[in-house]
Length: 422
Ligand SMILES: Cc1cc2nc3c(=O)[nH]c(=O)nc-3n(C[C@H](O)[C@H](O)[C@H](O)COP(=O)(O)OP(=O)(O)OC[C@H]3O[C@@H](n4cnc5c(N)ncnc54)[C@H](O)[C@@H]3O)c2cc1C
Image 1 (spheres, protein in one colour):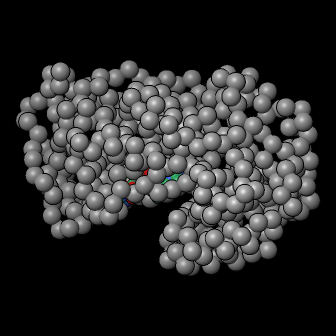
Image 2 (cartoon, protein in one colour):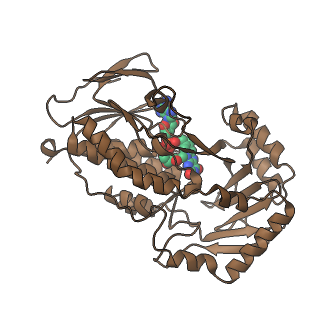
Image 3 (cartoon, rainbow, N blue to C red):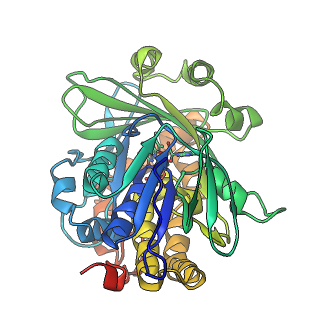
């Protein structure tokens, strides 16, 4: 680790961000612009520019715009025209097109769909000059007193900082150390699991996302993001200890789990399972939200999924990380070494937005969209087909007053920490 100290008495802070994903890098961007000294420690040996397609919506788009990155994001958007429900023979039973009217709220497809890897690379390009990135290193533990936090790294070194930020995602270790003893389990479980990977694209893979329901609470999605690759998502309704534990097992065991559950699902399952065998891009997770009242303790604070993962079903996970980073950086720029005030304001300002995006996930609706019986799948398709013939989804989207983040607006915050930066 490199050693440098912040100028004493100035508003500048020496900050360690644990996790170089979306929220960590967005925070690094704003703090570096604010004149703070920032190190990002990422556990992965290189930039972790993997993952499937993510949405940017509402306030998340505003946050990207304030970073001056909207044009760069626009140039990397995935072309997804809409979402179709297909039957076992691939026939489209109902199609919901993206809302391109410029009014109301986005449908299932957002106006800004981008591959996670592209967004991570873009944020990295915007921060790499001004921030120390250390790859292949994680924070093993830390201790703090009134004047500093000491981080102990996986390479055996340790270093003092003014502030440690846990931007280490849904399974955050920093969060475990921040929550008070006896705090309730922060995971709010929806009873749904998801795996995704890439397979070679074939001629019939269009720019419409296909969604297929199989009995047993199983869903398969297919969407294509470039001329050569198609993303496959397997989604499973299951509340069992086995399903919750499998995501921490070796990848081969995870693949076996998904193969066993989906083997007889129909449609293009055989093709997708074939592609799963050789893929490098496989990722398996339980759909959870992180719900905790504690976002900070002393000189340690959480940002992004570590603080408030809203889950992929909110459509606001990535936007939430970008917005949280912006709000936290703004308060740190405003209050500098008065960390108690900065961190309390971060909580007060951001909390209503987080409550709103987390409330977007409605387990009852998700269960309805993933029926268990064949008959219920048929009913779902018939109702969806009728609704689409009557243009219900487009009308609802266009006439909705607000997008998913509600009427909460990004606050205006100082970009720099006062006198240190012109
Ligand atoms: C590999 C990957 C793929 C993903 N794919 C999707 C997707 O397809 N769709 C979707 O909606 N969301 C996906 N997500 C989640 C999505 O990125 C987040 O919901 C959202 O962007 C908020 O980002 P975040 O920075 O808070 O968390 P994340 O993007 O999860 O980033 C956390 C970062 O912290 C690093 N990290 C974890 N533990 C440590 C540690 N102890 N020390 C140092 N670094 C650590 C991780 O390697 C990662 O780079 C993915 C996340 C990851 C890590």
